Structures are given as structure tokens and as C-alpha cells.
Image (cartoon, rainbow, N blue to C red; front, side, top):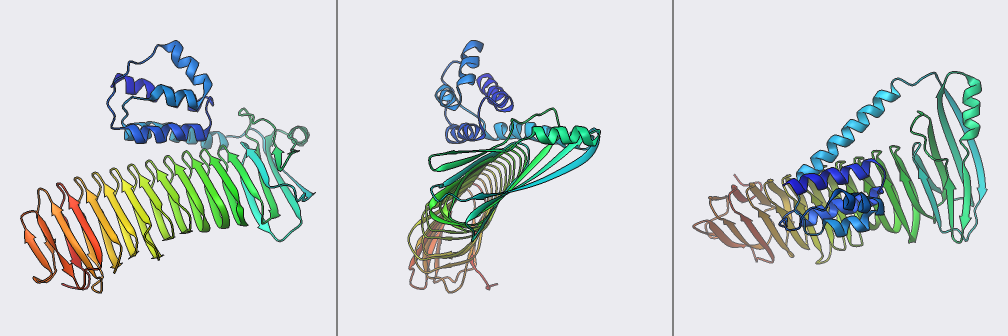
Length: 431
């Protein structure tokens, strides 16, 4: 227990002090999630070892924490408290800026070099907005908001905040000055670009918006600390989004997706033509999805609320939550797997005439209702409780803690299992 406490403090401190990046912290959280049930067998090293590995980044951290046991929800709670405190302090500071507000706007038209495949931009001063257009140029718009005592000081600071560019091989990097935490200045960046370009973007507390990019061979990488990320109208090869506390919205996107946040919520409306993953520790995940490849959606303590539009193959859609609830509605032609430990599972409006479904909860309740036109073979198990159903006697056989049977031709398969929660399996529109 003491070891777990020390390692939590260590990870939080090095994240707060900037010794590791957001994506590195994300790897640690994922490692914790994968190893939370392992026994604590290794001794905790001395303070000198802690200091050494903290300086060397995530690879040393991953090696160091191997074999330790963690309580994932406590880690998430501690990190969320840190984030909330930071955001409260930030808002407090913004409410007490010294001097007046001065705004400076600049624009630059950059002839587009067709050899450029990716734009790299790290903005720790403010937000990033990317808009794809039918254009042969890149339009760079810069908004600087400066709080100071008079116009002369504002002009001086504006000139000092220079935006530069660096082109290297097939990438163009937009360079901002090093972020000064002692001032409340903001720099917001907007890029209007050709639609067939890729991005590597990161912000500290500003929002990120990417809209209307069409590049089937390109990748987009986004990392954010506490700002929100909105991704919409994209058709690209791969998108990776990492956030600590910001919300993530993904709308009308056709891409391989790898989306992770600690405490923010994830909202999706996507066509999953490629293998994809969505993960949050304490935030909710909700939305609509059409899958044509394997998809994994998981949350530790947040809820999952998902509707599947359509599916025409046998790929796996897996929804997992440790203590949050799962709500599912939609068509099943694939392998659907829902699992939770202490949360409840509710399925309604289920249409299934092929494919197979597995619904499992340890101590949570399960309520699963199917459309009356479904054709499926089912087996329901409740280790310690009863099973409630409105099926006809010829459709179901009830034994102690078990019910099984067939609806119509039994083309799809369904297995429902709970240990100590209530279990209800029924047809909709039947009293």
C-alpha cells in the first residue's frame, strides 16, 4: 500500500513539473490500467533512484513500475484533483489580469510547397484551429491577446512574441516563443490549408479544432492537457488523440482512431473502417458508430452510451467499464462483447439475426431487450439471483439460476452472465 502511494505521488509530481510529456503520462496510465490487479512484489527504491528515473522519461518509468500493484480509480481521482486545482488557479489568475487587454491580429499567406506532407505546431499559449480548403496556399492567422498597463508595453511585448517557421525535408514546423507562465498573454493560431495535409499538434490549455481534411495516406496526431479537442469531417489514414482532462469530440470521421483521455468525456459519430480504440479513465463515452473493423471502447469509472448504426461483417465491437454503466442500442451483425465489474448493463432495441453477443457483469444488474423480429439462440446465467423474462414458455427453459432457449430460427447467439446482480432478458413491445 505504501509503495502504491509513493508511486502515485511520484508520477503526479513529474507530470506537474514537466519532466514527461502528455503522451508519456498517458502511457503510464495505460500501464496502470493493464496492471491494476497485479500483486505488489518488488521493493520500492530509494529517493536517489526516483530522482534518476524521473529525469529520463517514460521508458525508464515503464521499466520501473513493472510488477507494482495499483488502485486505478485512486490514481485517477488524485490526478483529477490536481487538474481541478490547476484549472481553478488558472481561472482565478485570468480573472485578475494586471492592466488592460490589447489584441493584435496578423495574417500571412504562405505559398504551399507540394513537398510538404506534415505541419508540426506546438502552441502552449492558446488554441489551434485547422481548416482544410480547396487552396494552393497556407493562410496563417495569429491573434495575440496581451494584458499590460499601457499601449507601449503591449506593443513591445507583441514584437517580442515572434512566430517563425522551419522547413525540414517533408515537414514544416511553426515555431512559437517559449511559453512564459508569469504572464497571462494568449496566442491563438488558425491555419487554412490544402485538404491533403497531415498534422502533429499539441497545446497546454487551449482548444484544438480540425475540420475538413481529406488525406487517405496521412496521419493526424493531437495531444492536449486541459483544452478540448474537436475533430470533424476528416477522412485520413490514422488519427491519434491524447488528452489529460479535456473533452474530445469526433464527428463524421472515417479513419483508424486511437483516442485516450484521463477525465474528459469522449463523444463520437464515426464510421470505423479501420481498427480503433477509445479509452477514458473517469469520463463518459457516448455517441454513434458504424463498424467495419474491430473497435474497443473502455472506461474505468465513466459510463458508456453507444448506438451502432450498421455493420456488415463479423468484426468485434467490445465495450468495457470497471464501475461505470454501459447502455447499448443498435444492430448486431458482428461479435458484440459487453463487460463490466460493478456497473449496470442495459441493452434495448437490439436487432440481431446473425452474429453473436456476450454480456457479462460481476455485481451489476443486466437488462437486455431485443426486437421481437430477432432470431437468436440464448443462454442466461445468474449465479446468485433470479432471471426475469417475458418470453413464451415454448421459447425458454428455466432451470435454477439459468434460462436458455431459442427465438425463431436461432440464427444469432446471445450469452448473458452475472454473478450477483439482477438479470432481465425480454422482448420489447410485450407486456
